[in-house]
Length: 203
Image (cartoon, rainbow, N blue to C red):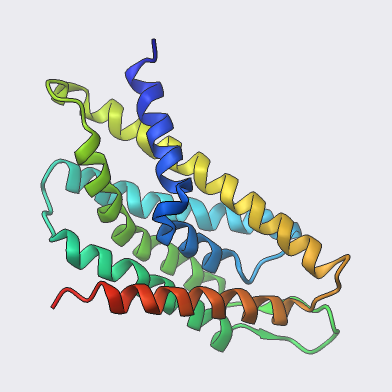
């Protein structure tokens, strides 16, 4: 029989990797679009910033300290994806010294995006978590929040690993330029997210 910790660990992992709720996956894809496999440490820090953001609001929302209408949050999530994708394409440029040059990045802004937008995504996670909380176990809420967040983090790192591996294949054996890969992935993410946002307008 599974422990409560394992149950919520699996719930967190399954929630972030569930293709039916692909908006969170799409945000991670947009975050990773400008990176290559050799920069995995930078991406890990970026994902950690996102985790810190969503952990804070997930806890506050689960404790009903910051109640926000679910419809508003569901609308804001694709908005964060669109902003991230547009930023990728418009701000991040090739430095021009070589055909395979890395991007001249303003990395601090990336981390701020991940942290701030993580706050919004955490509110989205809280709607799911509240529906899954076991009745009569309110005294175990801290453990449930912790295990759920660890599961989400493990799921995020799994998604990042897949994205960076695909990017490696595309940019090395297939020799697609990094800028072209960024434009393709960011453009696709922005297009899908824009449709989602229009469908979720809460007014």
